[in-house]
Length: 343
Image (tube, rainbow, N blue to C red):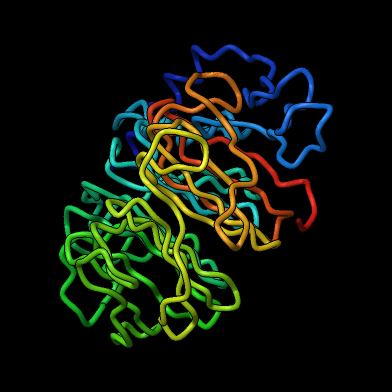
């Protein structure tokens, strides 16, 4: 019956269609390449683009998708409240509680999909994403207290059988060895699982000491296994080795450059620089391995390189240290790139 309706609608739509030239993607680029720090200092970060919808990436709806939209309602491809982003091999995923799912933009095949939960049910609070080496994307839903996985090309996210009780999963990361790191904000810890979902270790407990957390949120893991955790209400980043042992920490509460106001996403580039998003500073800051501030990037606003309550961050080391930032209240993802060398 659905196919009959599609064909009938096709006839109606085709009869009234006008043929128009396809428009160029509405990707926004600055007239001149925008860089940080400003000249004459040596540039370290450059603005690449920003996007809010599939159309901004040059992805348009197919003819039959448009018919389905006409009959059954359009699938939203525009971001409402992006919270996390991952990318790899031309496929971008953006977690968006505003639409109850995860946007998948496949720029290789020119396809867009809004991925929801089992049987098409909404994911009420998808706030964390991570990607493994084969392209599986893990989704943390803080409201459901669960982690889901989106297989490459799959139309829905399926529950991941983790053998532990999660209270409020938020940040996610996957190590080079396939280990899955889940930040449990309400439990003040990081759970470490193998690829089969078996619990291997629990890092931390509530407190203010070394290796203790106060509502941790985001996490990053390097290929060498070093772990960086946003210890949110202790206003610091804590660093652990591959065995989960405390190494160091840096950060303090404040509103000046280098301080922490409301830290969010954390990521590490191929040179070992540590990037930390701060929502209330409307910026991200880059630190060296010792926690010394190297460069702040951004301010509040709506132009390229400006942010409004940014949240998650992802760096694609395999793609020349391309930086993706969920610019939440601007309803977009901004893409930048590290163009400096090791410091």
